[in-house]
Structures are given as C-alpha cells and as structure tokens.
Length: 149
Image 1 (tube, rainbow, N blue to C red):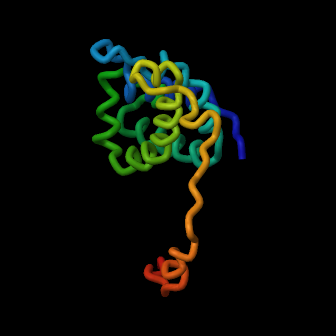
Image 2: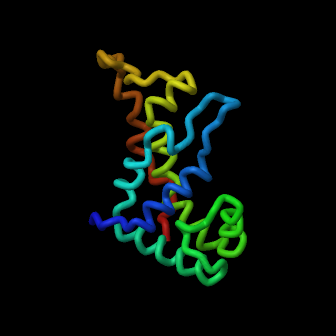
C-alpha cells in the first residue's frame, strides 16, 4: 500500500543517497543524487514497512544524538551505524536493494561504467530444440531438499 512520504523522510533519503553513493571524479561516475534516481527511490519506498523502519530509526537517533535523521551532517553520519547498529542494518537491508537497483538501472550510470543500456537481445532470441526426454531422470527423482521450518 502506498503511503505519503514526509519531508523528513525525503530529506533523510537524500542524505542517505549522498552518503552511500557519492559522485566519483576518480572513476567519472555520477553519484546517486546526480544520476537522477532520487524520485525513483522515493516512489519505491512509499510503503508502510519503510515508514515504520524510518520512524523507529529516527526515534533511536533522536535519543542518541539529539537530532532527527534529516538534520544530520556527513560528520555525524557514522555515529548512526555505531550507536544503532542492529536497527541500522535492518534499515539498510530494506532500502539497499531499492537504491542499488535504481542506481545501476540509471542510463547515466550505465554509460559511465561502459555498460550497454539497451536490451541484450532486442530482436529476441531463438532457443535451440532439445530432446526433453534427456530431462526425464531429473523430473522423476525424489525430492532432494529439506522442508524449511
């Protein structure tokens, strides 16, 4: 379900994006902010789970540092990971894949990394015919994995 993103969350996500993926002059690669993924990340994180994690992390940071997340500067950023490690790791595991997917899908990033931006098979790909009888032993064998508990 989509929820409204507060100005504090937008401010925090911008700080986070800038800290996690800064511009690289050495490799001539754009950072998260200059690659144009900010809106994509904001849209992807408009949900109850992110809202809940954000609020929980924000409260913990206010207790330990006396500031809200979006008010932190780059010098205070490492303190979050030390004083609220477990909560920080839960948050990063949640937002990390969203940020990385948006970043490496960005055409400007792909060009700076010399990766093609088009589809790998724009005209489709024809798979060769195979004899499916060869797979019969695989289909007929017993289950080889344990049930997850």
